Image 1: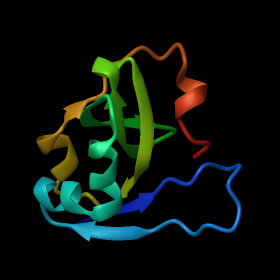
Image 2 (image 1 turned 180 degrees about the horizontal axis):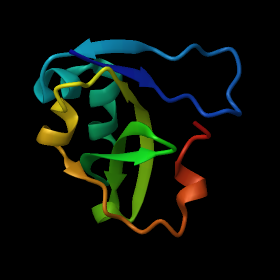
Image 3 (image 1 turned 45 degrees about the vertical axis):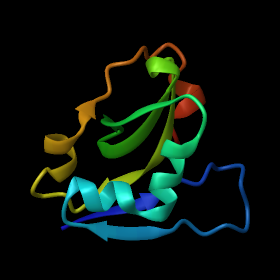
Image 4 (image 1 turned 135 degrees about the vertical axis):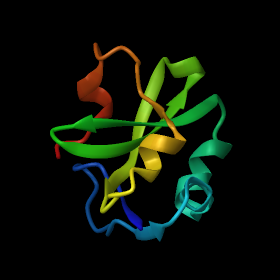
Amino acid sequence: MGEIIQHIPNFTHGVEPKTATFKTIKELLEIEWVKSWSKDLGFYFFSWDYYANVKLLLAEFLKGEQWWVVGKIINDEEKIVEKGLHKWVGSRRNIGLHYPQC
C-alpha cells in the first residue's frame, strides 16, 4: 500500500499537509485533493518523477509545459505509481520553480 503526503510550498504557513493511502492508481487519483488538480484549466495528466531520492506525483498542464508537485509518494514498494502513470519527461530548465525543497 502506498501513501501520499500533500506538498505544501515552503512559503505557506499554518497549513498542515494532508496524507492518504492507496492500493491502486485509481484510488490515488480519486483522493479529493489529488483529483482537484485534474479539474483545473489546462490540466494535461498526472506523472511521477524522483527528485532528491523522493518519488513525487506531478500534475502537468498545457501539454507538459508546466508542472506542479502534488505530493510525495512513500511506502510504494509495489511500484503502483511507476506502473500506472507516465514518468515525467519535461524540460528541467525551470525545475526550481516547480519542485519542492525535499
